[in-house]
Image 1 (cartoon, rainbow, N blue to C red):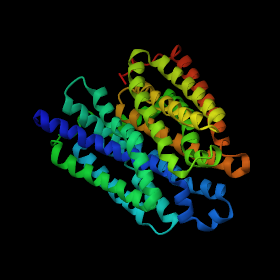
Image 2: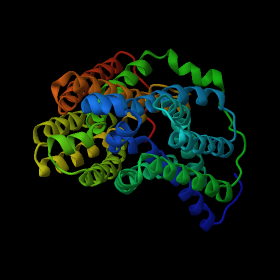
Image 3: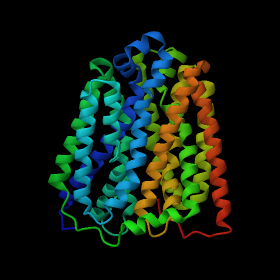
Image 4: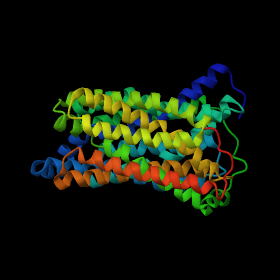
Amino acid sequence: MEETTPGRRWAALLALSLGGFGLGLTEFVAMGLLPEIARDLLPTAYAASVPDALAQAGWMITIYALGVVAGAPTIAVLTARMPRRRLVLGLLALFVAGTAASALAPTFTLVLAARFVAALAHGAYFGAAGILAADLLGPGNQGKGVSIVIGGLTAANLAGVPLITVLGQSQGWRAAYLAVAAVFALSLVAVLTTVPRSEAATGGSPRAELRAFRSPQVWLVAAAVAVGTAGFFAVNSYIAPITTHVTGLSDSTVPWVLAAMGLGMTLGIAAGGIAADRDLRRAVLTGFAGLLTSAAFFGLAAAHPIGLFLGAFLVGAASLYIVPALQARLIAVAPGAQLMGAAVNQSSLNIANAVGAALGGTVIAAGWGYLSSVWLGVALTVTGLLLALFSFRLDARTPTPEPVPA
């Protein structure tokens, strides 16, 4: 990578973080606008049964997650030697096109197709942008580079998602997605003008990346991520109807609940990175325990406004606290294939997104109430904790390399 001035370096880092901000918007904004999406795209179903229509609209979340699952490892293999700046620009262009198409598509089916296409770039962006950020900061700053990009996502949950939700509630959900597409377009221009050209990636190959899947531990840890963190998405996906139908607050309160969750995410990922560097095993296990406890508290307290806000904050904090440790764990059990380890983590998190949203919608549609998705999430988190314990127990029989700092 060519030499840069300090001013241009920080402008480039902000441009890459802006892309992470857009990812946070596009992934989470649907959760606060499910009622508006269902009312507009599924008017017949909405008139017949609001819970059924909301459950069907939840496929907006599920299909995006499935796109990430498909795209992250595929792009990691196909672009193993591609210059990371070129890859990031291509991924941002795909985000612009897919998000704009989501806003303009006339039918629910076409909206789902557009969301899937946009999601293909999600996991690869975090990996490629994180590498670029680390190169800009210099040797020994891999963790800082990744945290800068992910910091954009947490900032989106703290401020961007609530603001876009307000926009969607007042001007329609399509206006919200057009605004998200504009954020991606701005990031594309910023990266193009500030990030210096980079050489082709060295040392990577499709064969080396695919070799990670030979490790049983990769599959086991991926399962723990996919099942365990689905508990968070079972809560988060239906935060809007819980706020209005369970707590009895107005639609205008939903952005504030999302802001409370976003604040928890921002603090959680900062604490989680430190904890993972100090003791990876403890960070994973305490992270799952914290997610379990906070989800149970949310289920018990969400009927009251104070419990709703506090529970949303705690669930958000626990959900991001565990992410650095889980990524470090996957990289540790996939030696020689760090890009694939990070991609598998993104795929697993979005399997969790799909599973949490889909199963949560299923139990709600079955007539068990909006909080049934929360208690389903508790059960999923317990399962993930058990899988993580089993994985660490296997370490005693087949030691893994030292973990990469989160």
